[in-house]
Length: 436
Ligand code: GAP
Picture 1: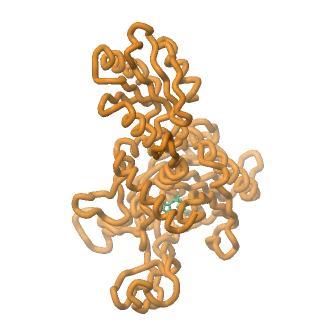
Picture 2 (picture 1 turned 180 degrees about the vertical axis):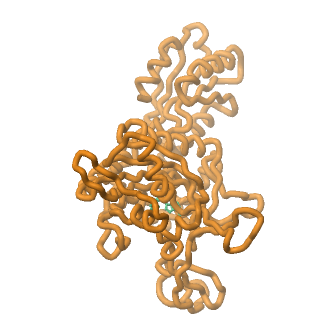
Picture 3 (picture 1 turned 90 degrees about the vertical axis):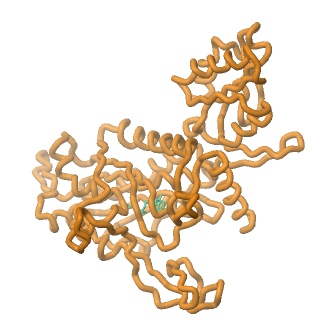
């Protein structure tokens, strides 16, 4: 695909997202705010589907992982100890002519391509948002909005260890908002200033760190495939030595081939004892584990898979987006996996006539406890099918003039547009078989 086509695809997707209510610019009526987005009715359902799947796989279905929910604002000493105050920076350059600022590693050459202005020397810019706690606005009250949820899990390590019966290897998982004052947010919701993270801190005996890094990279790749993302668009990329954080002994990115190139979807890192050791030192609290079977005391090492909800949402939408020609007309269809689709079953009366509308409403109410359903009687049936295709609804039920006499409806498949006649009494089972 050429660059122009890539751009066009992103533009089409962002326009669909807005038109159908997946996501749009935050406070758009005031001109928006760069790096901040809102999620509409379909977007919030898709986000919840993503988070539910993650929580189910990473926490609920495992006997070695527990979940927690820590505060967004922490004692600022935690961010000094973790190294974020000192090191959570990106190199920033400024165009001397127009004073626009860029991430140094995102620009080419020494001059701004738009106006020829020379760039300043790069300086380190800290990405943490600052705010104040309480009525005093001085440095003693200054705190940070967390740029990751991970530190909440490290500082709560002893509380979790002491309140559960877990022993390494075990994990703590968390889903929550994170904030980064990115110098150049962009590519719609790819790089945001406010986003949501899903992170697992997996605490292991030191000698087992590499084994678990290997385990988690495979598990996480499998998880993304389970969302229905095309395998040829996903890959695992090991970090080169020069890319690794100084404390990391190994890391992999799960990458997706976005329209703008292969980019990070998820990071999986072996963080050693770095975080727990740093917090133990700074807080003076004991963050070791005593293995009473081996009579050994150690600071557990950490393997961390960390991924953004918003970035998965964008990936899922891009991957599902298809255009095709049907009987001389263009059809846009989101081939979303049924577990992701915000609406799984649309119930559509063929026309706005009785008894069709009442029958359709009744069917929709009966299916609602079992599937994500929607009733729609607006516009022509063709337009309603197009809309459902565009929002990725796997199945449509059409209530027509034969329904009352035959007690049956047509079931239309999004992907191949075939229609089969199904008795109303067998609908739930027919859908369960198809949706999984
Ligand atoms: N605790 C480790 C950590 O936060 P990271 O690689 O900085 O690691 C993990 O971030 C994941 O969070 C990324 O792979 C990406 O999915 C998501 N992410 C990071 N920065 C983001 C941003 N500015 N906007 C949206 N998602 C972001």
